[in-house]
Image 1 (cartoon, one colour):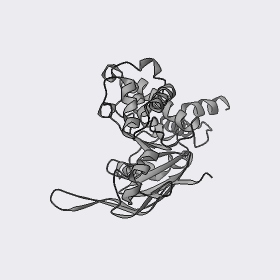
Image 2 (cartoon, rainbow, N blue to C red):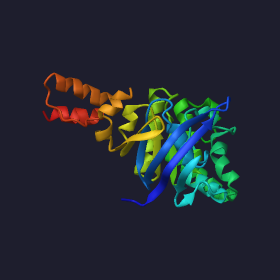
Image 3 (spheres, rainbow, N blue to C red):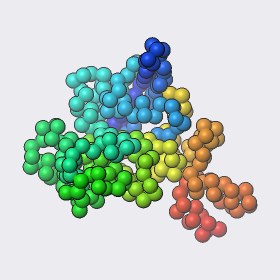
Image 4 (cartoon, helix red, strand yellow):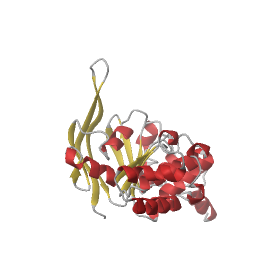
Length: 278
């Protein structure tokens, strides 16, 4: 197994409401994410997914407990910039992440803020746009792009800062089917081809099925942690109202009709292959 990259121990986070009430969002999270993993984080609304993710690059700091990124404590103010260089974030609304007049200027924004020399910024922008297959749009205004293209530009902006990990907070929730396909293809490439650690927060069981490991959260706690073929068909997941991947639900209904299919068929490709072998 690769070396630990993100670790939390007894992590607690408490929000303070306008009326002064304390609202616990994370309750004693113990977690290790290894370098190079592709982890999906799922759970009902309000389960703490986004709160946990924001601890991974020090956008939030622990109320209690500890978070380490590449051995650096996020609670130490001296480490915050280094942590944020190691962990990039891409959020659900691409329009909120694009700040410049052209695509290449937008991708250059992060490295410029880090004080990277101009020649190195040029190289990073070119490489990042190539990775997300947006080189042909480098001089386009971002507002003229489709939702999926905008999200890929946001990913390129994160890549240009050279992180070791990117956290995606429901990056496809505002996209149409084609935009979703483009973004997920890019996310998978970052992990499989570049070796980046990827953490994908999603409400889609089909998206979670693409990961190597799935974490399920409920009421501020991690209640399941394991490979998708074990986690996504667990009774606890259905009890949280999260459903099943489309292929897994089709397979379940076919099994109920007497078709001898194994469990753990989470993708359409896996289901089709199993049906051909009957």
